[in-house]
Image 1 (spheres, rainbow, N blue to C red):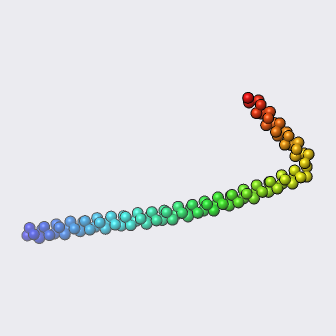
Image 2: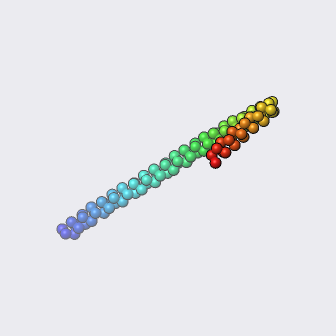
Image 3: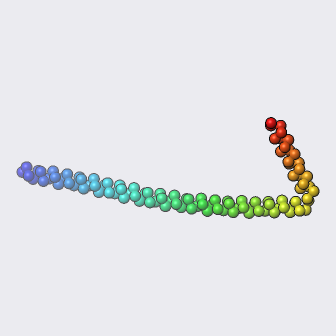
Length: 101
């Protein structure tokens, strides 16, 4: 009878250990799956941000080229005004810098 009780107790203990091990494996598998999904999502968001940054950079480059072209055309059409504006801007900058010293 003692042997039967011992075998039953061992069987229950083995069953509980097996159940705990199975639960631990499920937990590890679940964590690994969540990690993989998170990593995929992070990579997707990083790719979207990269695309947006490239679009913004292209837009800024195009606008800069348009402004540069417009300024160049204005300078060609009105050279005296351009020189006058440059002189006034330099005089104002010099005035501000001299007052600070």
